[in-house]
Length: 189
Length: 189
Image 1 (cartoon, rainbow over the protein chains, first blue to last red):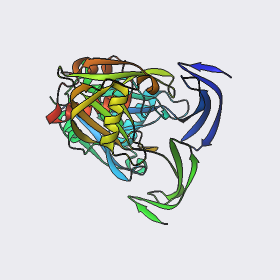
Image 2: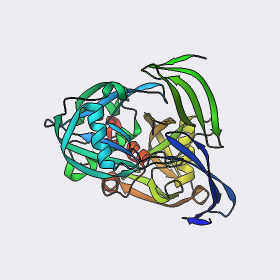
Image 3: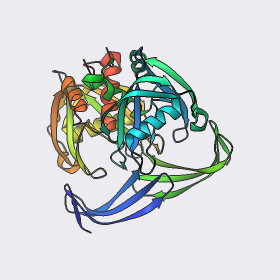
Image 4: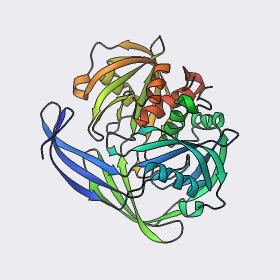
């Protein structure tokens, strides 16, 4: 059961909370300085984030109410992978469900980790191009109030003025901007 | 106890897990469509993220091992507010502890929310300028292996090539780039 993890040693592990969306694991550890302690990790399914560009370079952002933080949030289409679902399949599903759009070209930009002091959750960031209306969506069921199409410059203005507060949306937009082959516009450009 | 929260109604609430770093709250709710259910929220103290610029426009990044995700991570100096500690005071403390630097000018850029599908945690992003060595630091105690000074362009290259995987670091760098008064360089510039 002893397991070396970088400069830490895991002595034992158990799940101390579980709900349908995530669980909390308690590991008894030896810290890097050799002293004993606990490390609690929230474990959540991989999630996907889609930065889609239409033929005019506009990005769909969805507006929804976030119960956790008690406010409305403007975000790129995103969601968790279902059990056994590949990230690309989840990205296609979430884009369609939340915006009614399909895409002909998909690029996987990378994997980011949010709140990695307490959370273990992969965030797969995709860029989608070649958008077409699917003719249907599940916006209401997904809790989506509205879909806005904004230019990349406008998206960065919404970050700068505090309208966009979803950290993972900001990170996904930045990864899309920073990746040379998909650059549309940059914050501050 | 009934509380309207946007399109949700909270019927009751209780803490179902608690550890020294965060807690998990279970709310019995009526969903926007009126059906009953549970909403589980991880509640964590506000955290601070510091994008500091030296006189050459270089940004300190700290390298540390992240137990949750089992990998080494390159991040802006960051950490949680202690009980009763203001975000600015926490930002000054974290910058000093993790890099040995103080700063003469501080700008609060905004508040982001990471993993807001499950987590309630404010992330305060600061830009710091006018850096000076304090002559001491707690890098070892903080688990910091190394402090790198990188240009903004190099930081964005490290995001694009997948070296920087910390979502909140990417978001903090992007917010600093997108905010007009503090712009140094942009992803893709």
